[in-house]
Length: 291
Image 1 (cartoon, one colour):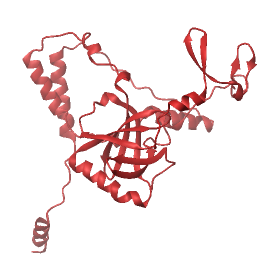
Image 2: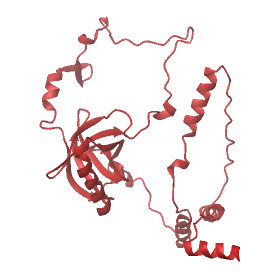
Image 3: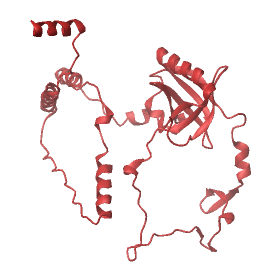
Image 4: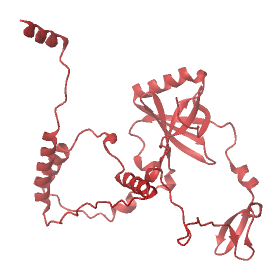
């Protein structure tokens, strides 16, 4: 069962097929910093600081006295009526429209904005077309590029299958992403010795392996939560700082060689995976024990 309240509901359309879906945020309820947020407090009496909206001329204002404005030159504003903004919003039925199915490596990761959602079937009628779409995309190794009016703006979305569900990730528009060619001029061209390149490739191969994100935790958030909990209990928690490593003067070739040794040693320490014996081998083992 989906957890939490849906952020958005609507039809997912690809050609003539319609799938009612609901979008749920991927992020956990804890969010950043372990779910801990801070308030501004008066040091003298521990009261929370209040920040009323004020006008430099007329002082504190009521909500109905505040309108939207755009600063077209310093200190000069034009008033924008909310009704005028509403007229600009995308017209027509609210829908998540698949524009094309693309290869799984087609969209450059630079365009991912960082907002991700689980798309879930919304209602019994959605079950079959949803499952069909997930399976078709998974077997074809395709992602869906889609457009939608979402959170008061036209958005670009990338939809991909993950297990039995669809994940929708917001994409930035091209004009909002800096071109990498703007930075290439600052990268100097250098000669790379063949022996160093060979060693670098060997190191990359030695460090190649599987990564399980579940093995990693936000240590800062954990420590911050522990600090807050200790304060609430009236305890004093003294964090233990990591000892800084002494910087060493080392040339690139030596660094590559030592890194390769360390990577090889790390791989050799990993425990061997336990594999269940085949039925025939297991039967043979039982026979030897009884004889």
